[in-house]
Length: 158
Image 1 (cartoon, one colour):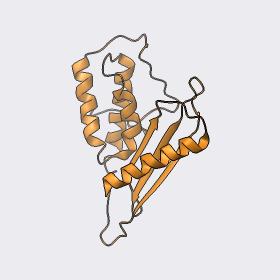
Image 2: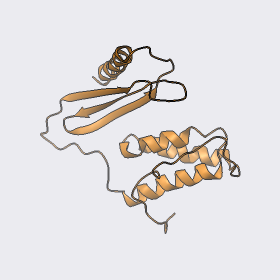
Image 3: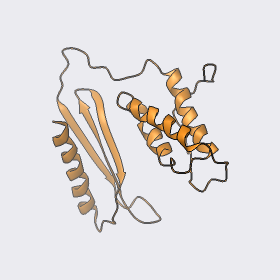
Image 4: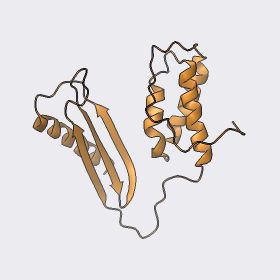
């Protein structure tokens, strides 16, 4: 990976990974080790969180295409080594939270996805996005669930 070609994004746009991929299987232990290293990095590199969570889903039976996606994340990290969280001295450290929800966003099962972003001053320190396990009957119901999830995270952070 020393002489690898650098990329500007951790994952290709429209990347569709699947557990039913026909690519050859790869060593599960090595794949899990790679994922473990990336999970360690997401504490300070929130820009790779979405991509890492996506490739981490395939630890049970990784394929060559999954390894290619993981290697792309490493190539992105090599090119953006100077990125990270920085908290300047004297800044306002007020905790601000935003939440949103996509009511019935999945066409197949009509389940919603909620998410939130949490800022300490002007710096993003945490975010989450999760597909709900149940189908909501109204947009109000799903907004309440998203707000509750966001408030829970804020209380934990304080």
